[in-house]
Image 1: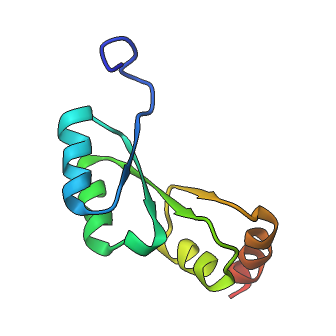
Image 2: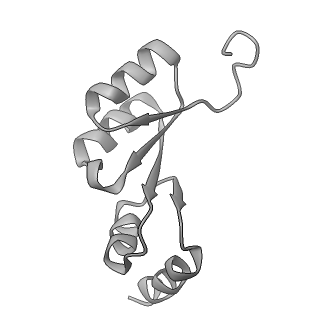
Amino acid sequence: LRALAPHVALKINVKSVEDVIRAHEIYRANLVEVGLAHMSEALRTACQDRGIKVMLYQQEKDPAAFRSVLDWGADLINLNHADAFLDVMRTYQER
């Protein structure tokens, strides 16, 4: 894929810093997706150090989790219940 289209975004799902390193070294991923439960400062730093964007994933309709997603300041968000997320985002921005 990289040989054919090096500019195309390549996303790998990760759960740890070690996964980020493998995604970068083996696949030259420029985007990783991580569930909120696995997000950490170390993972974010590993991504930043390698120029990898972070997509946070949150499946459940959970306003507290949505606030955490916003607190992390991820580059992208993958979630269900966009309507509930937007409600949380509106009040989050008012803080």
